[in-house]
Image 1 (cartoon, rainbow, N blue to C red):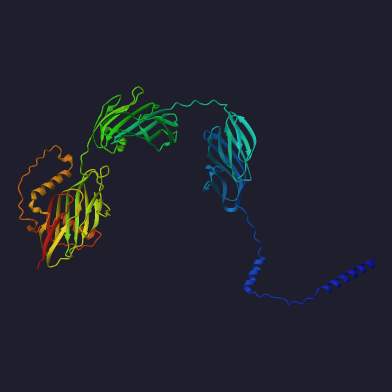
Image 2 (tube, helix red, strand yellow):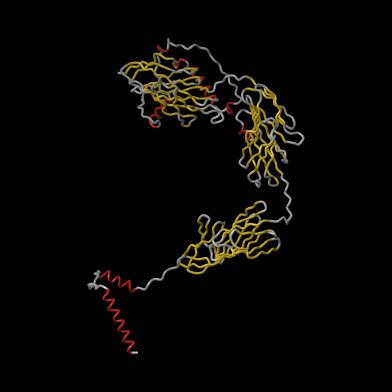
Length: 635
């Protein structure tokens, strides 16, 4: 034994010597050292002496299990979810509950739980650490299709999820889009299935119903209709617009049958409660968007041609044959000058146009010539017979100005600031065209007391006007101010001034020119007349204008007599030989001075002291009012 040990030791020694001889010898490496500050050394020693901190939980909370109970009633599914789980971290943690459903209530042991909604996802704020048990109540709409019903079950992201689903019908064939049905029972005309669902998913539940239960008889539909019809007699056509108002008394009608009068072409059917319309021979079938609504309103537009001129026509109206009671009103309007004869017949009764329904009055755009009311019966449908005689139209003025008051302030620099105020009666003219004097520019425009923006065209300036059907209904004021840059005054000379040319007739123009006090000015030429030459005419025009603007209720029943005395005014020669004494300025001059000082967006050094010269020009039709002054500086 000792011999064997010695032999083994010798073999090991020989092997080690051979290995050492095969490897090269390495030089001896000197020891290394690291120099640290004392504070860093102490910090490392302190860290080495501390015990390691335990790692926290990877998630804030977990859901262990979910138990769902779902019951389907009528057109909705409602369910209760019982959730159990653990909050792993200290403090308040956010726990995801479900997504894709309407959460009705959430509580823990009968106490409400604070919830957070992020889009369609719901989460609860729970304190921890510790276990919890939640009760959630949710709801989802039922999707109905022929022979099939379905709804979506929101499954919480728990470890396991089991469900009990209760649907109507004792032979319901229930299916799941994800999960496994583990049991099925039938009791009291309902089917109850037990299933294991896929956690964290939205599972669709659907089933088909066999015809085992008797079908309830549909309720009879009963409706009431009011038809408001506007008939417009045009130059070559007859247009009819019917506003149909249907009230549902019983049932839920999906469609409504509307009968159209013969000879008309349908041009449109509109209504906010309509889904679609189908035009058939002599009738249309309208489909309502919400059958459960108790009221539906829509507008039917029709038209037919006629030969023009005078004609006779018998026309029916839009009606609803299946309605229980239908009544209506008819208003007739016409384009141009015509005579209308429409007699009462077949249940039509004439009515005062002022008693028409307000909605029907708002549809009219022309004066209503005649009006009827009726109530349709099965034996006597409403038929309207019209005898129309048309006359040639005579030309009328589109717009006219009763008067124009112009006020001009002249500065020593030769600049003139002029305000023109017109009393306008407009029938159909869209704008007032002005031709300003050369070098003049518009400063401001007002129409019926409101600021307006003029438009500059190649042939003049256009001021917008108000027309009938808008506001106001009677005469209104149009005012504009323009600035004219002239030649500065010298010691003496001549100064010519003109008012703008307007494209509407003006009954009378009153013009007041205010010149600086340090100049002696007298008119020598022009087409205007000294106002003092016609004091009675100007005063009468002013009085007539005041009477027109006075309310009719104040002067009602008063007989007015106007006496015109003829006396030729004495005018000394032509306009060139007129001698006019200076008169004190009127209130118009004072108002324009104030506006130039603080309102108008320009700087004009208007004179505060001066003399006023007043002129008139009656019946101005597309003509300029002009005057030429001769001036001399006062010493």
